[in-house]
Image (cartoon, rainbow, N blue to C red; front, top):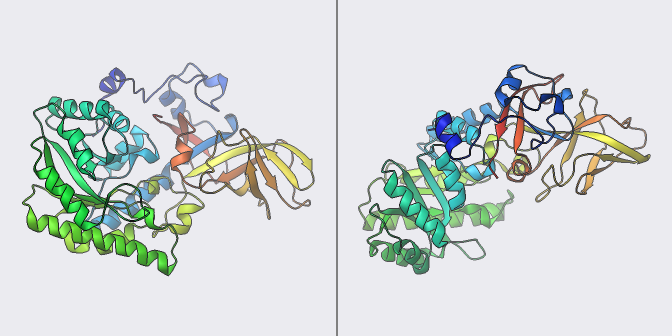
Length: 413
């Protein structure tokens, strides 16, 4: 559920800002006007400054429709990871499409979700910061309708939550980890011991089990698939034992990043009907041209595109663009060259490095690309694209001819 405009504004979430100098790449001619007003005028992308990150609305909506249908066919729920976009408007679209809830990674992100009116939240982390734990307890007391569960993986994490003051119980999911993984109790027996600690803590309410399989591999080689399946089989075994031992109200079993949700669905399928099986995939709403295109089990459409301008061609085989580390992600892969803004192919052109404000492209000397030309880039890993932009232009047909801006998405980073 999205908050009303008044409620959002009262918590400093201005989802329809007055455009200004804080909004990178918005031209000064549009400053001083509401984003919604400008969006209604459908300005061409060419009127905006470069570099410019845009979201193709139709592509994003199609991705959401595809995964929600896929999950529904398998009896699965979706609580997409909101940290991918940190964009309340995009969260609202997920909930409107039928997603069960929104996942976040930190108490602060949960606070943003609450400011946006989200009332079903998975906090996919151990909450050991006393400030965050105290807020969580107070928020549950103040809003009985709120459903919020966080992770525990040790007696110490249980103790932090158990020490909070409040009347409403704090829902927790016991996290299973594995050797070399991230957080999570190491092994089923260790996780069951944490479960016993939760049950003995009056402030807490056991809701189920959780895990993250993405720590165990990110390619589709047979040995990686086997390793991920093995981890998920352990998670399913933990869930079975917990459900056999405890009579839980509306139990939850959750896993699933954006690479392995197909294996999550297969390995956790026997639990559908016994528990609410929730996928937390988040990157699909935007997708990308590199990492998730290579690893995601469904053929989503990349919805993010960067428009960047040639600022120099100092050598025949070298081009510099005006988009750099401050504008595009590089933590997993460098961006890829797609085409020019007027649709020309650029055979052999590739990004080889990013500086703070430049992309270095090598290309054959005979390929025509001049200073002032605009190049379209595809990105890898949308999570680290959104956090470089406080306002993202939404367009129709980002990679077609003469795309127009039809909206703006505000991020909260």
